[in-house]
Length: 365
Image 1 (cartoon, rainbow, N blue to C red):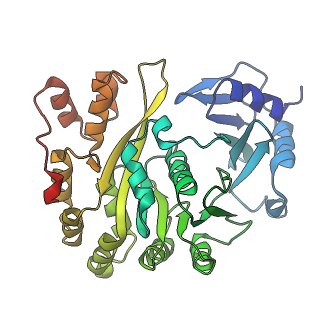
Image 2: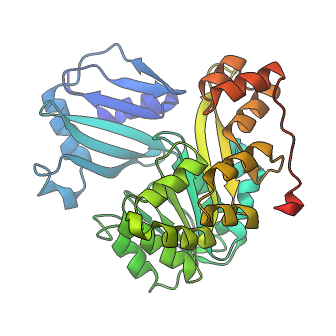
């Protein structure tokens, strides 16, 4: 029986699957509310994989598909959903992963994200990082922040993505969306030419190397608001990751430059709620106040961590504080709070009532 891709994606959409896995000689699998479910059905054959490739692969990749180990692109079923597709090889056979990208971009508040994130959309320059593991909702958070600017500010927004995921409709802003390989060669080149296209806001899909990082920083230093992502585990860890892109001899100078242009780092993960496993974001926030800037310039990362632990402000919040808040509001269990904590001993103390946030007056930061 021939595998009908569109029919299967429609059924997956109805099941609210976020990801669809199609492996050669295996039954399909779906990720729903963060967990993998194997579908009882016929296996996906080698010919099915080839048919899906023929049906979905953009023309630009067809001549070199045999040379590429991984390809990312977009497939769309009109009126249903867009999908970010990854095609790769597994034991010499093709494998597909489809990530569902909804048409509707949800506002920050309806995603369960902190209202404070809207503050980052009001800056005229600087750089904001959204960090987290794969599948933690970084792209969704960024799309919501970009849409907030689109609805409230008269700006030119340029996105450079791999590939373009969420598609925006011009509101108060105008938006130019460019995809790697199709519209632009790479992130560094995309930023270079974006600066010649009268931008106010630039979204760089991901910081992957030193060249992209330095280009993004230069854009933020020359009067543009830049958003980007990193695959890291925590806000302070993100700063260390950025530092690691730079040669050791140049790191001190780089950190002073970086501290002056970063507006904030947002780290998030999706955690299962008490509502039948529905996922909700737990969000760590590090806003670069004058005190944080001074600590970063001096390399005092531990002092930043202590400041975050003591802060009671919405613009500086640890992952533990976010998880504890979700627990207090009855959205997650104690076990979930501990499982997803980055500092489990402290989390256990908070849950037992031993540790309490003493708070720091933000006026002194």
